[in-house]
Length: 379
Image 1 (cartoon, rainbow, N blue to C red):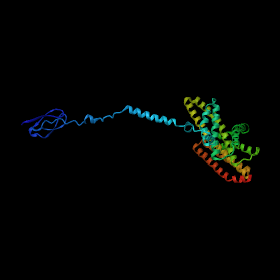
Image 2: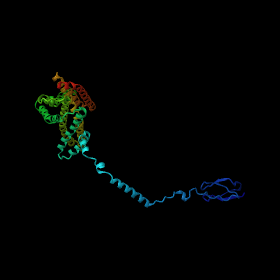
Image 3: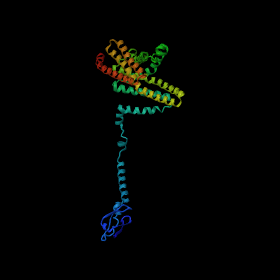
Image 4: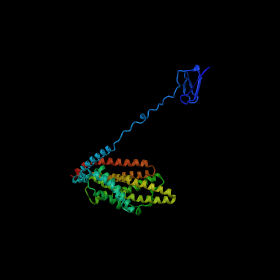
């Protein structure tokens, strides 16, 4: 039997097949290409043409860039920008300040409030003495709350002088007077009631020792204005005086707590080394922020409650002593319960602080409804 000899068109492997298989296909054992067995009339199968595109089709022709055109376009745009810059007015576009704008800024509360809030702390840190810095920061945060409460909560358009005088009287003379009374007249067992391990005794101490005496102290400026100075002030301005008294007390009290935080940090560092130092510093930072922001606010609210009852007594002119005692009792209660809860369950203490403000706000709404009676009395 004759055979047909041929080569694989891909790998050129010599192949052969029987003549009777001419026209059929066979698999190349080397490259596994399926190859048709040629006939005598069929020329040897050539390798398939390459499927790759011609070189000119593989990469698109690059567009020719004219460098001179780019330079000309850039120079033209730069010239247009320069001409536009020459027509921009420094006075109108960059520094639009004239006497009209200055006059408007001088009367713009929002402008000055935001400016002072951002700039004063930067000025405080330029003071070299750390104790002075702490004092100024305490006063700063207290006055921030004073502006917020007077302007937006009390909506009192009256003068600031009595409020500021009340602030410094309670913060300096009042705190000193309270400490003098503690050290001279009050027995130690009474002063130690808040520190009792018995929860009920501790609660009693916080209300009738801490809350009672502090709220009576903060009410002193109100009594001085009404009794000693015999000044006639509007009820809402009387509340402002009481609020600023609370702010002054809290601001100067915060200095004392700041010193305690430093001594606590020193003790922790001495006992536990670096870890104690880290813990003490973290605790001091938290205490400082808490007292500077929230507890200043709380003291202002509690003294504001007392002020409401004093203002109500001034308007009604009856049951004066009973109303003042009631106001001090209410404020001392929420104050004392807050202090007691702060060491047991801070979350509930925070909710009580919110309740205190809601109560105070309700008193303010009630006070505004009585302003007509006060105006008629003065008329």
